[in-house]
Amino acid sequence: MCQQRRQGKSRLFLAHCAEPVRKGLVRQSMRIHHLNCGTDCPLGGPLFDGFSKSPLAKISCAAQLVETNDGLVLVDTGYGTEDVRHPHPRLSVAFRALLNIRFRREETAIRQIEALGYSAGDVRHIVLTHLDFDHAGGLEDFPNARIHVMEKEREAAERRRRSWIAKRRYRPDQWDEVRDWRTYAGGGEPWFGFDAVRDLEGLPPEILMVPLPGHTWGHAGVAIRTREGWILNAGDAYFYRREMDEDRRRCTPGLRFYQNLMEVDREQRFANQARLRELRREHGGEVTIFCSHDAAELEAMQRRGPIEA
Image 1: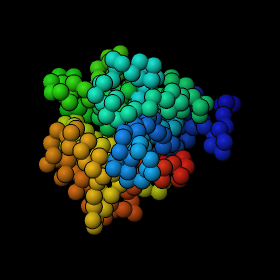
Image 2: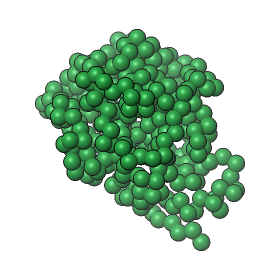
Image 3: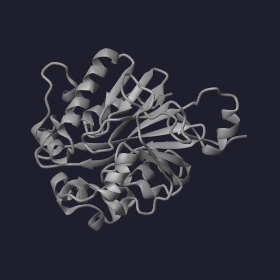
């Protein structure tokens, strides 16, 4: 009989349970957990996050852990254990100071996965919105995982890392031991009017990538179909929840400054934000959209508990 572990009210099936379960299924059975895999506390409080009552803001680094019949899938990793252990020289002094990063071992993806009763070896795939230091820091905590990223993003991170920002946002020490990469060109079958990358190698068809360039050249969202509809991790396509408002949309001054600092193509970034607002307006009942760094959005997703897919 398959061994099972319990954590609170959640029943978690280990990877070695997959084969007998999979034979009886036409469609993957999945469960999605929303994690915070890093916290930045820049000076400015509500001028960054829009709600803090102290001088320091709270900026999350959202990730998703997806339990599937064939093991675990991570969407982004946030900061990793080596970032916590050796922030210098792995991360830029400038960004560490600007963001006032709080390096907490318990927030790393691997520690949260272990708290659920799993191990690093259970993570079979990692799907990245992009390769910025606060999204890819935990890659090497999962040495057996296959890494999925847009082709343009890997090219920008490894071969076009020339500008002052690029050299500081992309930190090769975070992924120089990764051997199993899968890159994608995009332009596949549309998803709600967006280009989409379906059939990610080794992943269930309910998980796909949605190119959203502008923040970086190969930036993408990650969409997952659940029993209640789709969820879309829009990554850094926007940073503040009110940017998705149809009326009186706005962004805090701190996050507006940061987005302007990090963007590679403002026209594409604004165009994709407009498309995301249209998606929410036209299909809000079918798609839930959230970004990587809005703590209020992340907490709202976490309050829903694990999502069955």
